Image (cartoon, rainbow, N blue to C red; front, side, top):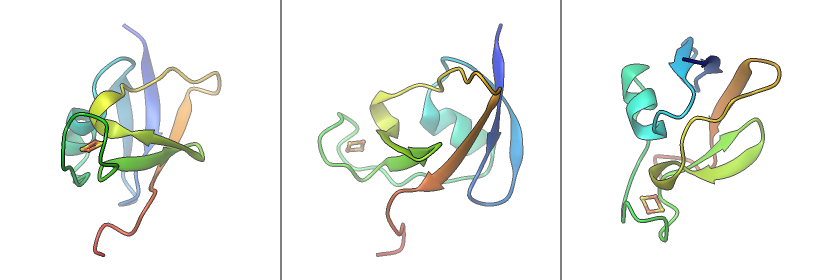
Length: 79
Ligand code: FES
């Protein structure tokens, strides 16, 4: 089981299993990713992972050569 260290926008960080889904990983870290369609089309769930925008509802936690991922909200979640 491979894990990767994730730094979350709320300042928390933790080890998460590569391949687990983003929404569950975020919830475990106390981070709420906004969602809408849950099908990959609306973009409400977009986060930035090491600067790359991903749609959390259709993506899983990737492996990282550095063993670390930095997550930021792609858009202001309070718009
Ligand atoms: S919830 Fe709509 S793209 Fe993810």
